[in-house]
Amino acid sequence: RKKVTKLTTGSSDFDTLLGGGLETQAITEFFGEFGSGKTQIMHQLAVNVQLPKDKGGLEGHAVYIDTENTFRPERIKQMAEALELDPVEVLKKIHVARAFNSNHQILLVDKAMELAKEYPVRLLIVDSLTAHFRAEYVGRGSLAERQQLLNKHMHDLLKFADLNNAVVAVTNQVSSNPGMMFGDPTQPIGGNIVGHTATYRIYLRKSRGNKRIARLIDSPALPDGEVVIKIVKEGIRD
Ligand code: GTP
Ligand code: MG
Image (cartoon, rainbow, N blue to C red; front, side, top):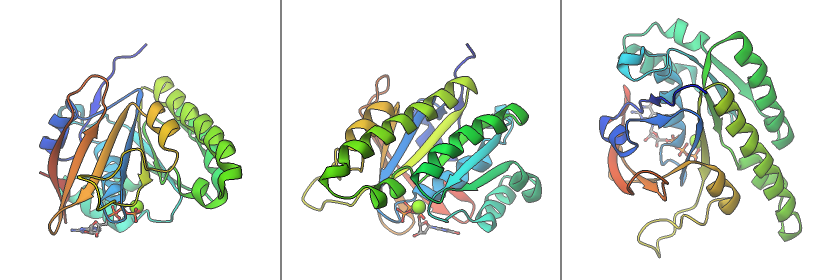
């Protein structure tokens, strides 16, 4: 069994909250409302995984399962240039796969496993984990089936993380609830099952301007807490 290592988020405050960054051999779920920065963070991670280890990277490739068609090569370019990396090389090491439906999304994890035999894939992103499932399994009658499939999907993802000593990062949209101090962490789609399989859960919410608040929820080994991050031209920063 390989040693668990950490991947930087781009923000040293955020890294500190996470005990040094996102852990390999684990699933980290980012949940929050539209515009809370989930996709921006996924882009940043896909760049950061390529950094040398002394800069918080894993010197690896990323697989980006894009379910909402929100992957932007131009944004990767900006983030890569800010880190003085060659954007063309960086883009080559991000293997983007569009998932057309939930079945296809599940299948793409197998494809990622195959790809990881050829390339040193150290990061697997699913953005969004739940959107297809939410759209396809509507109504109370299909809830159990949806949860079962999501459960299987999460276990496949965890297996990928373990076998490749990789970081797995997934996103999950949740509507904000103004009646509460912060959004209801039980509210995300697939709440229980997703919440119980993800090793780390981060709740993102909007603050003023380009500021976002990231809160670590119910982490097994780390104290709960929150930090402010910024989404700037260069990417995710303190
Ligand atoms: P949904 O997928 O709709 O649930 O939202 P999300 O949580 O994925 O939000 P996303 O990461 O797409 O955040 C969008 C926000 O990021 C925008 O409102 C901008 O504030 C910021 N943003 C996006 N692109 C850029 C960019 O190129 N430069 C800068 N400075 N900010 C950006
Ligand atoms: Mg998004």
